[in-house]
Length: 412
Image (cartoon, rainbow, N blue to C red; front, side, top):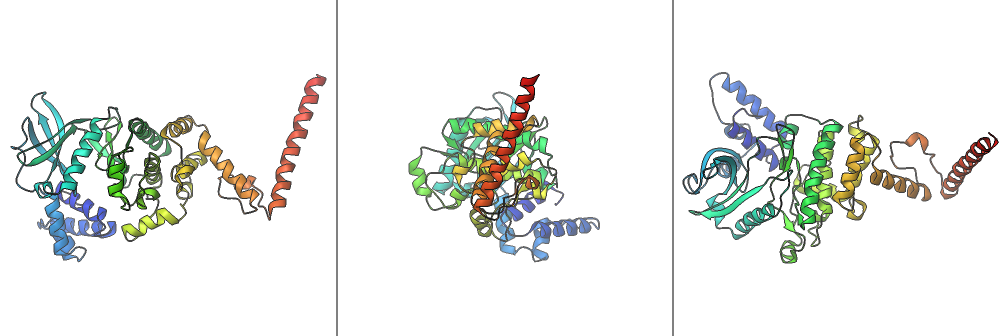
């Protein structure tokens, strides 16, 4: 990626908005470094245009979205001294700031003035603040204040010094199982807290998982969060897909009205998959192509990509990412139980139980056994009679063995 923070932000936006591929951005960044060695300090956006990866109009729009709009808000937000811009996206700019009354560092998210006239954006901005304020958990970025001053809508929150899972993945990191389980467990605990309070995040993804230097994970960005009981909002959003294509649940893609907490479990599973394999569950040339695969295409088992994964971990991810939500974990409570078992080196109870049910159903149907990680122990069945014969033979053999052991014990 590019060297300066501003150029790095542009590179990320280009890839996220599918304006260019990661490979094209890398080519542009390499070209930029080559030019810089000769004293040429051209920006990455200009190079992307020169190489034909972006149009001038696209670059201008990115630059407009990446800069403050309507003047600097530093003098417009009372009680806060904005020090440095630390992030920017399509909807807001985030600053590191000092809260003067308490002499502490915070993060201030500011809605650009160009979006302040859009009622939907403003409503979503305040909804994010209210959702975050309703939660109080060590693994959720804490809300402090949300208000408006001088035409600027702003949201003050806890400042987290560190990185995001997204940034570490972008740098080429593939997490080992133990580290990934530790982070996902913290996120499952955060989501359980939110779900108990009736809030669905709806945009769980690597970019929204912040990591402190002590590796404490914090769930961020409640911009798409919704109260499960908010039927009025659900009806206005019906038929529209809200979420990030690489991690979105099938029911969100379909724009269903009754989205519940299991949508977050699916997205957390997709994030878990990405962390352990180094790639997203489904890839495609366009967002719609990716979402179509979430709906229709079978998931490549994660342990087929990363063969170091345990069977239990792979089974958990597949259960989290079941296309039908009634086949996923019923809640984050059960998910946490399985994560704790996995962390102790034991088989996850719920995922293994579901795996056994799936194998039995497959054998009863007379089809070749599905991938279980225990293929050598599964006898391929030619039809229902053979499956029944094999199962009865195993049960009969175990019964004889148990009787022999019992007779020996009695005789002694």
